[in-house]
Length: 502
Image 1: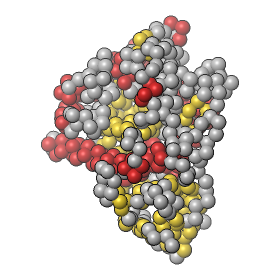
Image 2: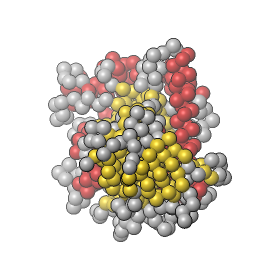
Image 3: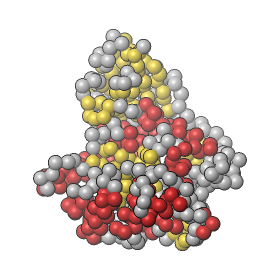
């Protein structure tokens, strides 16, 4: 007999919010082999006429990535965007101080915009508020978004790009609270420059949306004060504040590791509270929304990265090889983002190719899918619509750092247009399957389309270029009878239960 049971009630009217598709965004930085050897490898058998790897393009399209943050990251705080436009042969090679490599500038704004178009993604462009500032920021907006008849728009046209890009989303620098950042600033210093940059960027193009830098992670000593001070300066000029957080299983305790999404949930609630405090203080009318524009698991590669030869070109950096338990936590994190779809409007899985990424490439060889590829793909593809607010009762457990961790981590998305309902669920139980009873009587005439399961007996199992033993199957046992959905979620599993009208 299966002893543990969880219950869920889903109603069409229990809505959190319409999901902004940008919540499924990702990130490509000039770091490691993300650009050179990742998206771009001219000599590769799969390279197109632009040098872009088509096998990578196909995998990114499979993920349906709607938005890609670019060009950084720590990289952007020392980047002169002018180095990456115009004739490639005339572009300078630069010492890249953030990651201690050499940047060739073969790929710059126009090349990356071309690649983004090939994968059907918008770009979330970051401006350098480390070594540069207001002037470079407004010039880049003019270069990218102004139609014609001005110095920088005409410069873009002279570089072969007639139509403006009309980039909608812009980041005001990156992790400016971090002492490791080129041009690190106090909250007041950053708040002022972000306010002034935001002002002139919007004078060039009033239609853009701006993301102010929040804390680099919630453990920063300046966390909370940083957000409050920055938003005090920028509230009238920005739409978003950013959040960054990475997790790792350093103590090799899986029950504690899989509970880390509760910490992510708490981080999100804290930043919403700070943003709302500033709104109240300013007697403001608008909500500041959240851009969780760096999130992932990152801890496997840190020792390896210490051995890299300085000033090499595109060395293998931050190349975490993810195992099965990492995929489960990534699934829990995606569910957490969806639970806050009313305020988290942008999120970027960091990063997309080779660098802490769902997609890996071999130099001159194949591209392959990491374990984390699958929960990211499933939510992106099937998680479009309205985030529902399920009523859940689940058995709970305590771990080293957490109490009352639910065995069932779950949420649901309703797509009224396609008449589809999708339940995303992780069973955190190490020993046994979890019996789920889900009341969906409100969804008349719905049938189970498929029940996808990602499971593996070895929690440390990884994928590689030689094979992908961690892949999902569609043999889940979800059944629907008289408005009650029943399913057994296998121990330590990621589940996608898809329902639709006949």
